Image 1 (cartoon, one colour):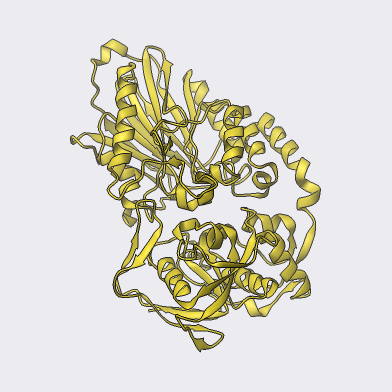
Image 2 (cartoon, one colour):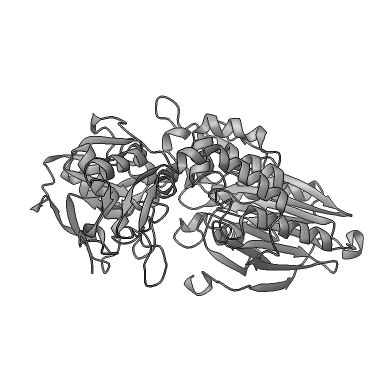
Length: 538
């Protein structure tokens, strides 16, 4: 898949589309333009930004009256403004922008199910998802699709969210008080439940008169569960003209064949508004796609709305909490690519050390997916901490066996060299990952750890300089998301005794370490961008 990923220049694909009705029955006078975003992660001023997006929409409306703006999930979480407003500030700005259709990504649930359901009626575009259902009866929690009419042409947007949501958001948000799942995303090991549910909604939309059907899916491609990827959905359904994708933070536009051999266009825009997607239905029935890399200026009205939202939280966010004499890295300084999810890095070492020092435990395991931004040299503000650690996860300590720790490291190494949100940054221990050994980790249908069925990739695990004892009990620190609630499928700690329960948030724990253990300064001990050798990969 690598050959089509991470495209940085404008890329245009044009494909003739086969339609079920004669073109003259619903011919267009003007283009239909569908602008699409994904994985904004509260990046309201990043890259193109919301003000630039508003200008792109305004320019599109100058060309044609037929313009839609849709989002493929993970918009409301990922930066301080999202955390402090619990998503509402981003929803408000999206309402000003005039979105027409939105779906929940896995991180729309990060403020809890109750909060998400509070936000649903506040999002004027509506939230749609065909495969988000009640586990008991398979009834949809949200509407599955929306049909919009442009001149005499009807376009249906069908929502789809990754079943990975059950493990990549906090699992307990989808469970009742007894730990039983009460929500489902039509997950199974084959993908067939997902395909069937989406096909049912596509067929309904066609029956309701849709001339075109676009799936707007937070599904992903590279590094995601293969049977739930956007490509797999496209290949195992029919009647879908395009899949507007999200989740894997990639930039691409390409064609695949569907279940009956017809072309389906796939498109994804990256993250943080690095690009904006544009799908165009032309009057002659062609479907064109491009990724827009810059806007023709910024819309002044939206810029003012954003400034007002930021001003509300500015005094708290500007507070200095320390100073970095070296840059704390989660990206490769040579390539700029993210490494926190597949190798050791200095920011991973720093946060793991922070948890271990403040929580006073033997070892710390930090899932790489919880680290979202680098910390640059200079004064560190509270905003900088929240940019890097936006989830507000609470820190815990539990007592676990060496075997449980070994299993957690094995699962974290399962996807290497591909990225994984559960790749472990560590403190108090070291280990070797042998990439020549195929992973034998077995998962259940929801993506949770079951067992290691064969050879292990992880070896030479040392805790405090001594070889790990699989029968010995150790104190393990980290966040409640992973250790207590089994996030990222890390369920091997289920039933472990909690030594300290939900003490401080991740950002506040790091601030405590910075101010009271490092005297307010991050120094040379974290100067090496690839860490100090705790994780050896061969």
